[in-house]
Amino acid sequence: QVQLVESGGGLVQAGGSLRLSCAASGSGFSIVFRAMGWYRQAPGKQRELVATITRGGTANYADFVKGRFTISKDNAKNTVYLEMTSLKPEDTAVYYCSAGLTIKLFDSWGQGTQVTVSS
Image (tube, rainbow, N blue to C red):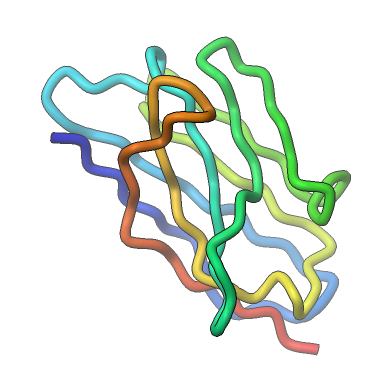
């Protein structure tokens, strides 16, 4: 059973930065062998993809975060990060970590961490 635990969310002013972390655990689970991703869901909206990173470390981003957010991972710590800069009020959402065999097959999710950006 995979467990993904997000942390690092909070309240920040527009233009500020936050770093989210996703600690993965579970019997035999290693992010080395998984694609990882970050999604977000704002109130009244559908969950949307923010960023993904493949097993090999290739990162991809939604257009609305390109140049502002960076996804990375530390295989030794079994942890994935989302560095968020130049935050905007429209980035306010619950951010979820996900894992899967590929970036098209996410099947494990964390509980989410709230990010609120004030104007």
